[in-house]
Amino acid sequence: MSVEEQLVETAKQGKLLTHKCTNCGYLHLSTAYYCLKCGSKGFEDVILEGTGTIATYTIITVAPAGFEKYTPYAFVVLQLDNTHLRISGFMAGITTPADLPIGTKAKITGFDDRGIVVEKQ
Ligand SMILES: [Zn+2]
Image: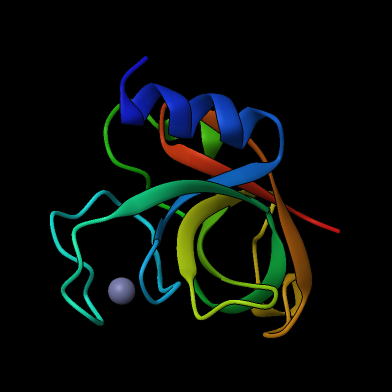
């Protein structure tokens, strides 16, 4: 399986595949040749629980071609619990800011043709 396929499979289980520096422990979302923090080249896969809080988002009412069936939805940034990591994903059924206050607890629940799917916890 490619790293991309692993990411998709992990997201479908509600989790997030990350790459941890074996030297300093810094977590990376995508594969890197060198640790962004210490420059080491050693990494190991770490699977995190895909839970966190909504850091920011944009409501999409006019979707790109091919994604009209999903509107309205929000492009969200999820601050993951207990890490510095933020991931972007998509949440269905968001029409106004009242639907999704900043700081709402949310979690990864799947993966579709837009990317990672996030739902309120
Ligand atoms: Zn490191």
